[in-house]
Length: 188
Image 1: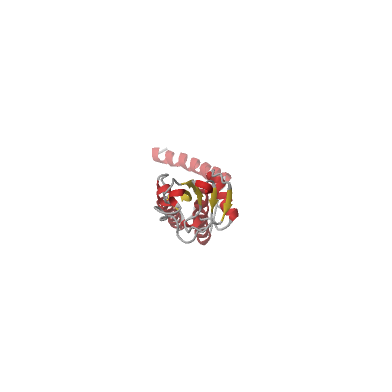
Image 2 (image 1 turned 90 degrees about the horizontal axis):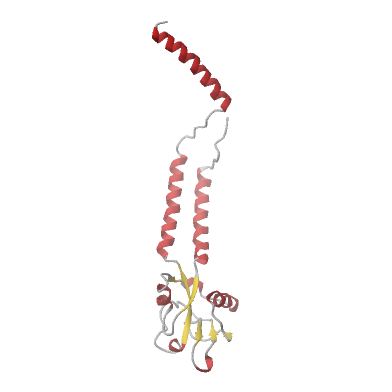
């Protein structure tokens, strides 16, 4: 008996969609990430919202290497790089003898705060901005809807067409029977 083009057991189909959902969530967060240099005395939430994005706490650089990648992606040119001691780093100093020095190490939640005092009025913060969470939710819901439809479709019986030779035989029989039936109907 011929097999359908694609046949996945229901558990496999669900697992595949769940895997796609997880991969979509993790890769989109990184792929949709945009580093931006905020204005002086501007927090990252405000800087990201100006781009139609959200500040994402999960992507603060945890090492000098991660900082160098973020600064490079944002197009930030620093005279030197240092961990720093301001909890709202990463930032680039913009005045005085420190101008052009970049500091990457901060602590805790940093999307909001750090404005109105040292060094926010003398620094520009580098901010991780991602696509709004609503977009991620819509994608997730779409994938879950697809999983539901796949589940529903898997409960429908698969009908497989017979091979062409069998179809030709059936058509030939219909033709002969059809001619006999037509003759009987005419009374001949």
